[in-house]
Length: 253
Image (cartoon, rainbow, N blue to C red; front, side, top):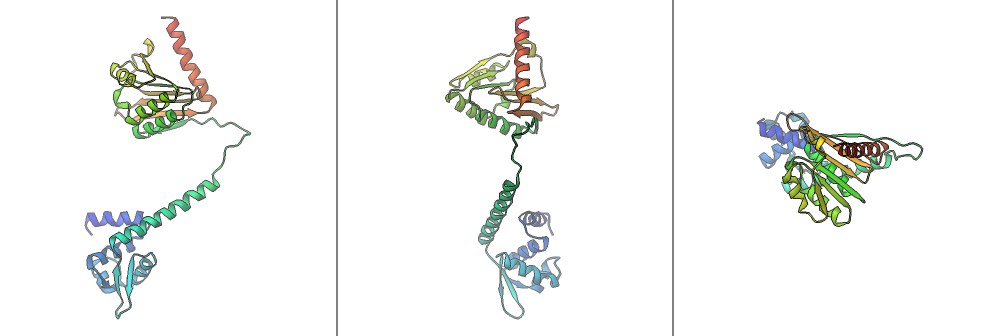
């Protein structure tokens, strides 16, 4: 098989077909229609296996059988096959997630779990920041020194919460960042405390409602890693420590 065909077989396997089913389905589309002998001649599927594989594909609604002598097989159209596999995928997806939703452990009231999570990769950090910002009810502090770390989704989340009356402060030592976000109605901007200006590894900081926090750092290769916590004692205490530290340093300078 060519590399392209190997990749197609792999893709069909990820959609739930077996390797033999994928190969027979592809072979029949190449042939238009054919017998088990015809299929075996253009694939590495043994002729003895083609019959059972074809029966399985028929059960899946992916081919039709002509009761002739010898038996001939014809694949359904690509459009019909795509719709069949899509519907099957959706049914399996619903079945899987419905089960997980039914058995997942709900948090108990007897104990408090201190959840501290790690997020790796810039896209996932972006998503987590947007999620935290979108749930803000009272105040937001967002900080970064790098304009490229402000996505359109983050801007929209800041704008939406500021418009909803949430106190929104952006902290950055970079003029471009402050100018970009100061243009959003309801968003205030200011430079960071002097003692933080030398930090070259910091990525982003998000504080939401005194009980949610995200801190990220940039690795040497430019990738981003963040820790975050929400609704935990850890988050509340860390926020208090950061803000108290800044206040003390400002008073002593």
